[in-house]
Each structure stands twice: as C-alpha cells, then as structure tokens.
Length: 263
Image (cartoon, rainbow, N blue to C red; front, side, top):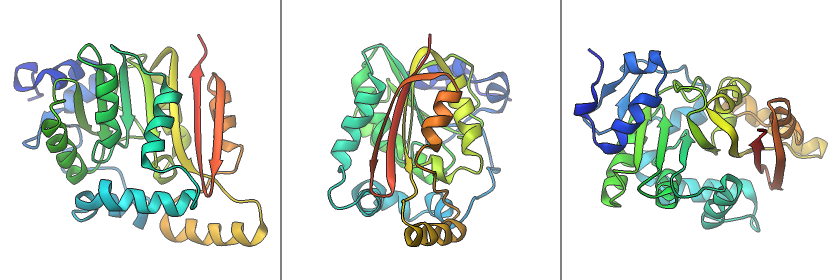
C-alpha cells in the first residue's frame, strides 16, 4: 500500500503531491524519515566512485572531510572552498523566500539545508539521492538544525527524477552529474521539473587542455566510472534545452555552470 499524507511530517507531506504518478505509487515512508521510492532495488552502479557514495563509511565523514578534501584536490589550491560553493549555488539559483528547490544527488543534505534556510517556512527544499546511508544522515542533521518543516528527502533515481513537470523554481546538482550513467538524460529531467524561468546550478567535472592531462583523465574515467566533460559540453547541453543567461566558471578539473530556463 502506498504511503499516505498522515504518515508524514509537514515537509514530506508537501513533497508527496510533487511526485509523479509512478513515484506516488512506489513511495514508502522509511524508518529513517525519508520517502523511499526504490525499496531494495536501485540504479546500477557506474563504478567505484559511485559505490563509495552508497556505502556506510563515506556518509560519516562526507561533510567534514571527504567532500572538502576531494573538492580541494579537483578545484585546485586556489579554487573556491566549501563556503564559496554554497555562495556560488545561491547566486546561480537566485533563491527567494517561498521558492521550491530540488537538490539532485543531495548526499547528506549540506546544500539542501542551506537552501531550506533561504526559502524559509513558505518554501520547500527537497533532496533526492540513491544512498540510504547518506539520506539517513541528511534527515538526522536536518532535524538537529530545526529544518524538518522546510526540507524533505527522497530516495529515488536522480537520473529519472520521479517528479511532476514544472514543480520546482530551481534545481541544483553539485558534484554528481559526472557520476550518472546518463547525464544528458538527467539534464532532460532536471529541465522538465523546472517552472518557466526556473534556474539550474551545476558543479561537475571538466577536461583539461593538454594532451598528457587528457590521457591521464581518460584512464581515470575508465577506472572510476566518473565522466569528464569537455569544456563546452555542459554549456551546449543547457543551450539545447532552452536555458539562457548561462554562466560558467572553470577551476582546476571542475566547472560551475548555471542558467535560467527561458520563459
């Protein structure tokens, strides 16, 4: 039997109608406090890099050690730190009180909680991820921060996004697009769930220019399952999907890209 609204807290209750018909039919309220649309199943792994994200160790160190350390390595010594990433996300998304924002591959919810604070009690921040351990941590930290009425979490396929079209004002996907089996399909779905004029913010990989560096990146891509995007690939993909006012910042092996869906 599908989950009913009276089984849920305020934020999850508001999230339930945003699910697609298939999503509503599959949804169950997990003991950890998130909506589970996958049950024992889940998308196939794209490689070792994604496997680490769904294990039990990484979520315990993700926010304090894992994500900052890997980010620093990928962005370069002089690249933006985690506080700067939050600032960049806020600028690209242009969130206002009352907005609805979707955090794709939200992990432990560090960005989801920040968005919840920005959109306030009249808004809604929804994080979606495949990892049960990440989401359990996200729910605990969100409850501890007193944001459970504004932020909700879904365990679901971040590529297919089991959500209704035109249901969010903004979509964020930081440090995950390069791990998806079909990133262009993921961009299709992110675009579909945005309202007219909605904003998108992405943080993902980018390939270098030199031949030796590109050779090393190709080897890493095969071994890790992590995709390295060409320097104009993501920008072109957003343009093809109707985004305007596109901005890109490249730092190290990474790029920040944002845009607005044309009215």
